[in-house]
Image (cartoon, rainbow, N blue to C red; front, top):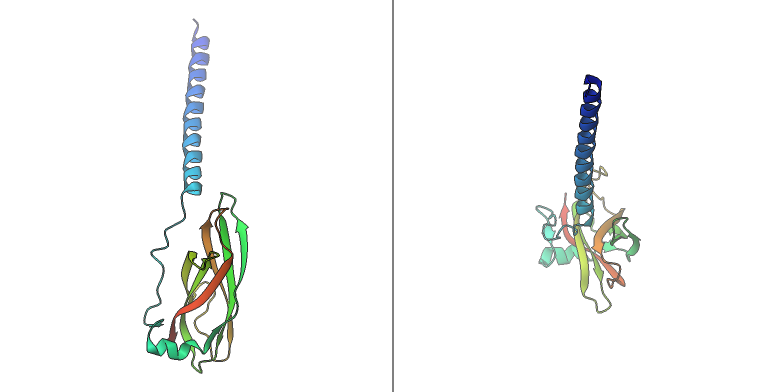
Length: 170
């Protein structure tokens, strides 16, 4: 065998090894992406809480509850490209307390036909750094959206609820 034939054979082996390594890395990368896309949604146990707020169930909260009005919520649902369904719950909150609200926590719940919760999500609406929102003044309104994810296509989700769970005043 001549030197040129040895060089061609070594070059061919090197190229084949490169293709094998690149192929193996590609398969692992694709498998990792599929795993991330198919894993279940995060468990809702670690939901945020508004610090220093008046919470539902306290006498002071009950006093102000009737003055923080929540309009009838509406829902938009859409399938995800990786499977499952998400729902965007929307409403308007109206502040008739006479005080400026600088903290607002709400719960959006999707309920089944019997009124049992299917999934819910608690969100701190105010403050919201992404929207540069720090307060809701008296006699003003605030549109609120809460996205609830992780529904299967056959899940029973005929009704929605949105409620204030905590409020904090300036």
